[in-house]
Image (cartoon, rainbow, N blue to C red; front, side):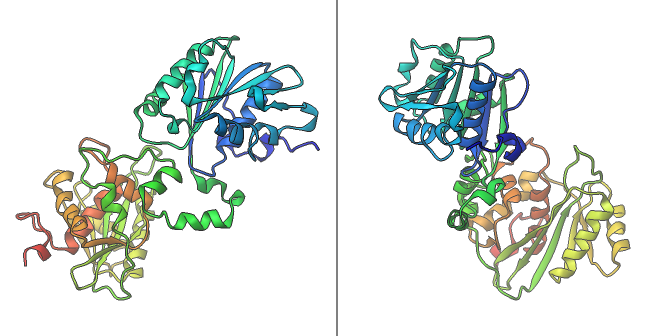
Length: 400
């Protein structure tokens, strides 16, 4: 039976890119469709572009067979009957009717790549390899046939240096993607399991395809985030809306950080919402006012280092009933954030649910990085919520 052309059903980031690249690297979460994307790319190279000697490399030879050759999205499954693709397991070989051959390899025996030569290759789950750099380099020597050897590399990212090195190369096209882009093709059971990963580094790595690692110079660790989820009580005695404003809304502009936090009267604080947005001032001002009323907030705390009274007047002109406090940064971001980090470490600050973008800023911000809009709004709001003093730089509840 004739299959529907891949280009008609694939998402844009699943289609092999045009251009003069040597490596197409797909860094994506589980369930994104990496295997299908790579298998379709190999099929296109063989049937439409004249490539004839392909290397298929997985972590083990068994995985190469089970995923790349015989898997649900592997080469045998996606091929039309008229292509007459044959598999010879004992020879680790796939053969198309036009004479093209794909040979299976396991990265555990990467030295087997000495000697053979190819014009294209597909590496699957590269980050699992015990020796990723050595395997890649050995394959690079073998990709010496034809005018333009191609390598398709698919993997769920892990914090290994060689992946970062590849991303920095001019001849590598990197595509990022998350599992949630492919929801309609994922089972309800799988989607249910994702709920149990909420807020963990495993979710960021395996679902959102982030390269996750604790950095030496950051204030928050992943452990601080993974242990901070708690449902807030129905009634909160004090709620603040923190705002880190962006005065422009162009493609290169920062977002306006808008974070709602509240306390329960027993010394525990909660992040209730992240409403950050990239929008003109009049638009984000309306969103701030809506959050103020939704959460019955006591105060809007807005950074006024740039804009000052104009920003306060903007909010008051949107809704004159809003109580606004303008604050100005007199110390570094790190200094301002340190007492807030203490609250997380003392299990005094919680998140009502996962706030992925905010949490990625928390664990990734280092001195000198681009201004973290959500993080700044969070720090201003919690500083006011807990009465953190400029003199002591400690939350008032720790001074009792």
